[in-house]
Image (cartoon, rainbow, N blue to C red; front, side, top):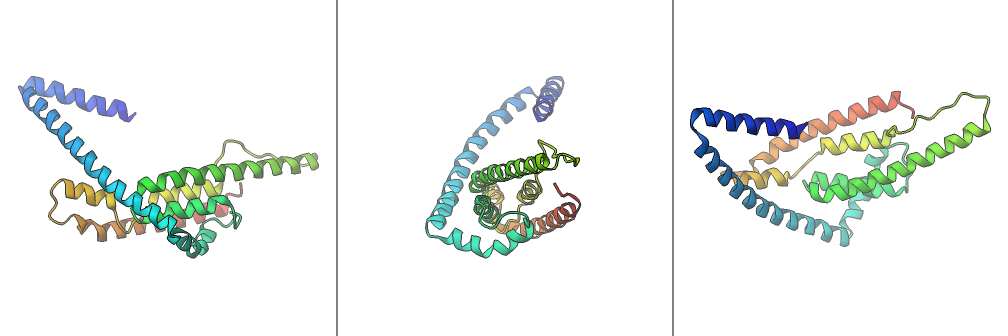
Length: 213
Protein backbone atom coordinates (compact mmCIF):
# COMPACT_ATOMS: atom_id res chain seq x y z
CA UNK A 1 0.00 0.00 0.00
CA UNK A 2 2.80 2.40 0.89
CA UNK A 3 4.49 1.65 -2.42
CA UNK A 4 1.38 2.77 -4.29
CA UNK A 5 1.08 5.85 -2.08
CA UNK A 6 4.67 6.96 -2.66
CA UNK A 7 4.49 6.17 -6.38
CA UNK A 8 1.30 8.21 -6.67
CA UNK A 9 2.85 11.19 -4.89
CA UNK A 10 5.90 11.10 -7.15
CA UNK A 11 3.80 10.86 -10.33
CA UNK A 12 1.53 13.71 -9.22
CA UNK A 13 4.56 15.83 -8.38
CA UNK A 14 6.18 15.22 -11.77
CA UNK A 15 2.94 15.95 -13.66
CA UNK A 16 2.39 19.17 -11.67
CA UNK A 17 5.99 20.26 -12.32
CA UNK A 18 5.56 19.56 -16.05
CA UNK A 19 2.45 21.73 -16.26
CA UNK A 20 3.98 24.57 -14.21
CA UNK A 21 7.39 24.52 -15.91
CA UNK A 22 9.32 23.36 -12.85
CA UNK A 23 10.88 20.14 -14.12
CA UNK A 24 14.45 21.48 -13.65
CA UNK A 25 13.64 22.08 -9.98
CA UNK A 26 12.45 18.46 -9.68
CA UNK A 27 15.74 17.24 -11.17
CA UNK A 28 17.82 19.40 -8.83
CA UNK A 29 15.79 18.29 -5.82
CA UNK A 30 16.25 14.63 -6.76
CA UNK A 31 20.02 15.05 -7.04
CA UNK A 32 20.28 17.00 -3.77
CA UNK A 33 18.13 14.47 -1.96
CA UNK A 34 20.30 11.64 -3.25
CA UNK A 35 23.42 13.29 -1.85
CA UNK A 36 21.69 13.93 1.47
CA UNK A 37 20.55 10.31 1.63
CA UNK A 38 24.11 9.02 1.18
CA UNK A 39 25.46 11.44 3.80
CA UNK A 40 22.71 10.48 6.24
CA UNK A 41 23.42 6.77 5.71
CA UNK A 42 27.10 7.31 6.49
CA UNK A 43 26.21 9.28 9.63
CA UNK A 44 23.73 6.67 10.82
CA UNK A 45 26.19 3.87 10.10
CA UNK A 46 28.72 5.49 12.40
CA UNK A 47 26.15 6.07 15.15
CA UNK A 48 24.81 2.53 14.78
CA UNK A 49 28.29 0.98 14.89
CA UNK A 50 29.18 2.92 18.03
CA UNK A 51 26.05 2.08 20.02
CA UNK A 52 25.79 -1.53 18.88
CA UNK A 53 29.44 -1.92 19.86
CA UNK A 54 28.67 -0.43 23.28
CA UNK A 55 25.81 -2.91 23.60
CA UNK A 56 28.16 -5.80 22.84
CA UNK A 57 30.67 -4.55 25.41
CA UNK A 58 27.89 -4.26 27.99
CA UNK A 59 26.79 -7.81 27.19
CA UNK A 60 30.30 -9.25 27.50
CA UNK A 61 30.90 -7.31 30.71
CA UNK A 62 27.77 -8.78 32.30
CA UNK A 63 25.97 -5.45 32.55
CA UNK A 64 23.02 -6.69 30.49
CA UNK A 65 22.63 -9.79 32.67
CA UNK A 66 22.73 -7.64 35.81
CA UNK A 67 20.09 -5.31 34.42
CA UNK A 68 18.03 -8.32 33.32
CA UNK A 69 17.99 -9.71 36.85
CA UNK A 70 16.77 -6.38 38.19
CA UNK A 71 14.04 -6.30 35.57
CA UNK A 72 12.64 -9.71 36.50
CA UNK A 73 9.83 -8.24 38.68
CA UNK A 74 8.78 -6.09 35.72
CA UNK A 75 8.89 -9.10 33.37
CA UNK A 76 6.84 -11.17 35.85
CA UNK A 77 4.26 -8.38 35.98
CA UNK A 78 4.05 -8.02 32.21
CA UNK A 79 4.20 -11.77 31.46
CA UNK A 80 2.66 -13.58 34.45
CA UNK A 81 2.21 -16.87 32.55
CA UNK A 82 5.76 -16.98 31.21
CA UNK A 83 7.88 -19.67 32.96
CA UNK A 84 10.56 -18.18 35.19
CA UNK A 85 13.63 -19.56 33.45
CA UNK A 86 12.25 -19.67 29.93
CA UNK A 87 14.76 -18.65 27.17
CA UNK A 88 12.40 -15.89 26.01
CA UNK A 89 12.93 -13.99 29.27
CA UNK A 90 16.54 -13.07 28.44
CA UNK A 91 15.65 -12.02 24.91
CA UNK A 92 12.72 -9.91 26.11
CA UNK A 93 14.82 -8.10 28.71
CA UNK A 94 17.60 -7.49 26.19
CA UNK A 95 15.09 -6.09 23.72
CA UNK A 96 13.52 -3.78 26.32
CA UNK A 97 16.91 -2.54 27.54
CA UNK A 98 18.08 -1.85 23.99
CA UNK A 99 14.89 0.05 23.22
CA UNK A 100 15.20 2.10 26.40
CA UNK A 101 18.70 3.11 25.30
CA UNK A 102 17.39 3.94 21.84
CA UNK A 103 19.28 1.09 20.18
CA UNK A 104 16.61 -0.14 17.80
CA UNK A 105 19.20 -1.96 15.68
CA UNK A 106 20.39 -3.99 18.66
CA UNK A 107 16.81 -4.56 19.86
CA UNK A 108 15.62 -6.14 16.62
CA UNK A 109 17.58 -9.46 16.78
CA UNK A 110 16.63 -9.95 20.43
CA UNK A 111 13.00 -9.20 19.59
CA UNK A 112 12.94 -11.76 16.78
CA UNK A 113 14.50 -14.39 19.03
CA UNK A 114 11.99 -13.59 21.78
CA UNK A 115 9.08 -14.00 19.39
CA UNK A 116 10.49 -17.31 18.16
CA UNK A 117 10.77 -18.64 21.71
CA UNK A 118 7.27 -17.42 22.59
CA UNK A 119 5.93 -19.16 19.49
CA UNK A 120 7.60 -22.40 20.60
CA UNK A 121 6.07 -22.02 24.06
CA UNK A 122 2.61 -21.51 22.57
CA UNK A 123 3.05 -24.58 20.38
CA UNK A 124 3.96 -26.63 23.45
CA UNK A 125 0.84 -25.37 25.19
CA UNK A 126 -1.28 -26.36 22.23
CA UNK A 127 0.22 -29.84 22.22
CA UNK A 128 -0.55 -30.15 25.93
CA UNK A 129 -4.10 -28.98 25.25
CA UNK A 130 -4.47 -31.63 22.56
CA UNK A 131 -3.35 -34.28 25.06
CA UNK A 132 -6.00 -33.07 27.47
CA UNK A 133 -8.54 -33.20 24.68
CA UNK A 134 -7.66 -36.81 23.90
CA UNK A 135 -7.99 -37.74 27.58
CA UNK A 136 -11.34 -35.97 27.83
CA UNK A 137 -13.10 -36.91 24.62
CA UNK A 138 -16.53 -36.23 26.05
CA UNK A 139 -15.73 -32.56 26.59
CA UNK A 140 -15.93 -29.89 23.91
CA UNK A 141 -12.43 -28.49 23.83
CA UNK A 142 -10.91 -26.51 20.96
CA UNK A 143 -7.71 -24.55 20.69
CA UNK A 144 -7.68 -21.94 17.92
CA UNK A 145 -4.62 -22.16 15.70
CA UNK A 146 -2.61 -19.33 14.18
CA UNK A 147 -3.55 -17.07 17.07
CA UNK A 148 -0.89 -15.11 18.92
CA UNK A 149 -0.58 -15.83 22.62
CA UNK A 150 -1.05 -13.25 25.38
CA UNK A 151 2.72 -13.04 25.80
CA UNK A 152 3.31 -12.48 22.08
CA UNK A 153 0.70 -9.71 21.91
CA UNK A 154 2.02 -8.04 25.06
CA UNK A 155 5.62 -8.16 23.87
CA UNK A 156 4.72 -6.73 20.47
CA UNK A 157 2.77 -3.82 21.99
CA UNK A 158 5.48 -3.04 24.55
CA UNK A 159 8.10 -3.20 21.82
CA UNK A 160 6.11 -0.80 19.62
CA UNK A 161 5.47 1.69 22.44
CA UNK A 162 9.23 1.60 23.16
CA UNK A 163 10.12 3.67 26.21
CA UNK A 164 13.30 5.56 25.29
CA UNK A 165 15.70 7.50 27.50
CA UNK A 166 18.11 8.31 24.67
CA UNK A 167 16.45 8.65 21.23
CA UNK A 168 19.67 8.04 19.32
CA UNK A 169 18.03 8.02 15.87
CA UNK A 170 16.26 11.34 16.27
CA UNK A 171 19.35 12.99 17.77
CA UNK A 172 21.41 11.80 14.80
CA UNK A 173 18.80 13.09 12.33
CA UNK A 174 18.63 16.50 14.04
CA UNK A 175 22.42 16.75 14.09
CA UNK A 176 22.65 15.79 10.42
CA UNK A 177 20.20 18.51 9.39
CA UNK A 178 21.86 21.31 11.35
CA UNK A 179 19.88 21.50 14.57
CA UNK A 180 21.35 23.98 17.05
CA UNK A 181 20.57 21.67 19.96
CA UNK A 182 20.06 18.09 18.74
CA UNK A 183 19.62 16.69 22.26
CA UNK A 184 16.70 19.02 23.04
CA UNK A 185 14.42 16.17 21.95
CA UNK A 186 15.46 13.99 24.91
CA UNK A 187 13.02 15.47 27.46
CA UNK A 188 9.92 15.46 25.23
CA UNK A 189 10.93 12.03 23.93
CA UNK A 190 11.05 10.55 27.44
CA UNK A 191 7.65 12.02 28.31
CA UNK A 192 6.02 10.87 25.05
CA UNK A 193 7.40 7.32 25.18
CA UNK A 194 6.65 7.02 28.91
CA UNK A 195 3.02 7.90 28.26
CA UNK A 196 2.77 5.52 25.30
CA UNK A 197 4.37 2.69 27.29
CA UNK A 198 2.08 3.28 30.26
CA UNK A 199 -0.94 3.19 27.95
CA UNK A 200 0.41 -0.02 26.37
CA UNK A 201 0.87 -1.72 29.76
CA UNK A 202 -2.63 -0.74 30.93
CA UNK A 203 -4.14 -1.96 27.67
CA UNK A 204 -2.28 -5.28 27.83
CA UNK A 205 -3.34 -5.91 31.42
CA UNK A 206 -6.97 -5.12 30.61
CA UNK A 207 -7.00 -7.38 27.58
CA UNK A 208 -5.12 -10.15 29.37
CA UNK A 209 -7.89 -10.43 31.96
CA UNK A 210 -10.47 -11.13 29.32
CA UNK A 211 -8.34 -13.38 27.11
CA UNK A 212 -7.50 -16.80 28.50
CA UNK A 213 -5.94 -18.38 25.39
